Image 1 (cartoon, one colour):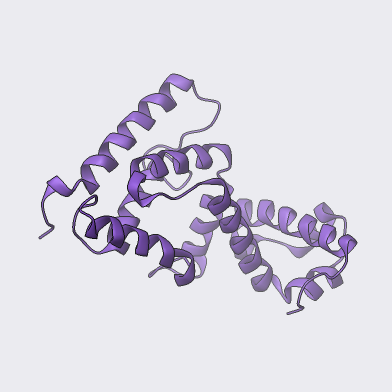
Image 2 (tube, helix red, strand yellow; image 1 turned 180 degrees about the vertical axis):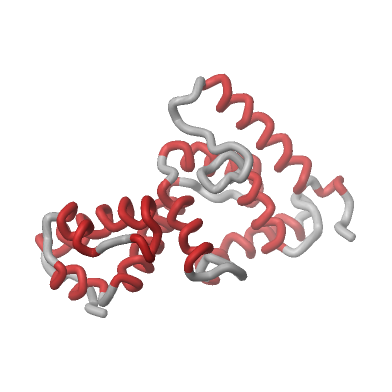
Length: 198
């Protein structure tokens, strides 16, 4: 794979490719995505795509990393306010459900088990949870299990939900009701008073 674009024009082309590919992969998955549609939407050519990203799999990996970085930048993580972090994640998934769809395709087509995240992405969060546990602010338990639980609760109404996928155009009262419930459930789940896990 190329080291990436080195000029402002190249960076703009790379950004257009990533954005077009995110739409294509989110709608059609890895197998169903077509480079021809991506290049047409990005107003570029296959040589640019392959030059920057190597192949379709490399492009998909770059899209996942790009969208995950955008999500992490948009949603602050605070181990001392896991309910607030969960609500922020709920709101971000409403604003942009694309990453959830991309991760669902990743789970379906490439990685049916294990962690979808890069270990380095979660390390600081798990360390922060462990510190909050040591200080008695978060219940005992494996920090990675607690992190997975909080994320799963935050994604309860996302595009990956098997029960109900919320959208931004629903009444604000519905979102407020879900936010309150989500915050309360996360608070209860991570409360140090909840007792140690079995």
